[in-house]
Length: 293
Image (cartoon, rainbow, N blue to C red; front, top):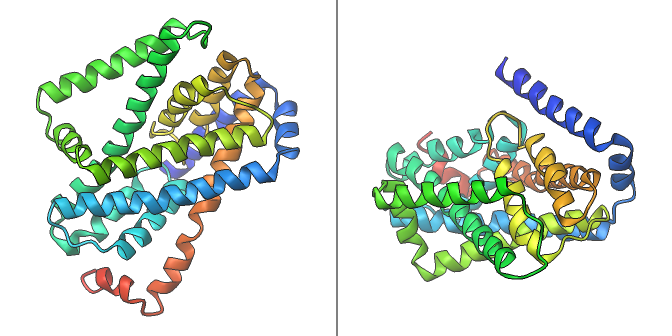
């Protein structure tokens, strides 16, 4: 029932967005999409998964968990596929924690997953904050409405309050980000995420300026973490339709970009099927977790 409700909710959001932005120009943009740019986006998204697996491995090892890179990569692809096809967008992450319990205990396994995700979100928001500061200081930048500044200030205030209050996960995430390899990997992941979305936009005929890439794309990607959907569908397209006009682009191009991005997210999660086959053919990496499940 929950799956049906969230499918209906995502479909309703996309339907409403298509109605407002205009379905015809959206489908036209998708039909004429440049596959070369979409290929660039797909390469970036696969690279993101590869790097996220390494980031998770580093976090898990910092908590004393025995996680090899091969196992981390397998579990990350599997969780990505689950997040794309099941409601909430977090069930895949929960499965990572449950399947990693063999390496220590469920509490530390769950903490490793939460910390890895939090580190990624902090870095994305940090880049967004820098982008907004650039937009504020440089003349002739994006005409950002007041509500965006309210959202930014609110996020900074919440993060600052949580850090000052010594909220454990926030403090642990900040501590891990002080490590050079963690910072480098998180920086590369964030850059690839921004490039992947910008490449999708370019593929459907929208050229985003640099300020928009640093400010609007993080907001669009952040909308995907709202759990009332499947794979971020609906929220992503709605946010893009609302924000693209700030960069002088049609809302329909924002919707087309969101749909293309969502399709590529699902496509680039399909390598998980290979790992599922390996599980049943005696792969030694798979046996590392299977022996205790």
